[in-house]
Image 1: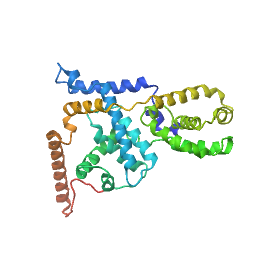
Image 2 (image 1 turned 120 degrees about the vertical axis):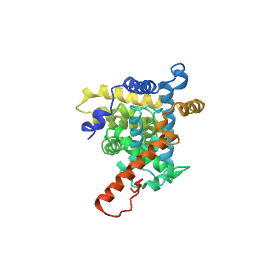
Image 3 (image 1 turned 30 degrees about the vertical axis):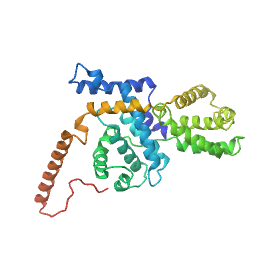
Length: 320
């Protein structure tokens, strides 16, 4: 149940200001930690608004990746991927961890959690470029991602309450052919993923906002269903619900796709100011990996000698 979930307890916030403060804090923390360039810090580092614009663009990439994925990806995996991505960057700066690498890891972890069974080999077949490199990055970031999510991996998406609302509307309302709402609902939910709605509102509230939006697109009115049937006997809760739904619909309506030229300039800036210790193409990162694997080799050799057994052990441990 959502009301008793870790999502409600740890990942639903009071307002957008709180979210912006968390993001700004991570931006300032990164600049303080890596701020050797005191004189031109504003020109060198991304500010919090630039980070936000960058992450909005990578949310579009995330959605496109999920849409093109083969085999066809269930909607719940997409929703969970977005949640992981948004949660991770509430407590990390994209200058510390590049979103192109975290994005793929979020989707891969969501596939596992939502029991969409694809192997790592199948997964990276959906990625353009060096697939072995992509595999290494995803697997090396998987534990990191789980740690930064505090291992709260269960996500409640709006899809289950949507099905409940549609069944209830078919049973108890005067609306005919409720299935015609479905496409509008799906479009609304997809757009809501690009907003912070999932960090501010319960899945059932987002679901009801989608249903009411779909009804209005079909020139139907479900107000009496909500007031007289759905909340019959609980009218005191209606004002808060109405306000939540109004804000969710407004967030979706006001969403703007980031300007591509601005994003390109930010990406260029990011390549200079990102943490090279977390850049798979940097020598610092490669050296750290070499040391890690050498330590693993040493441990394996010691274990093999102590048991006097012969084993074929893969240092990378890629089997999943």
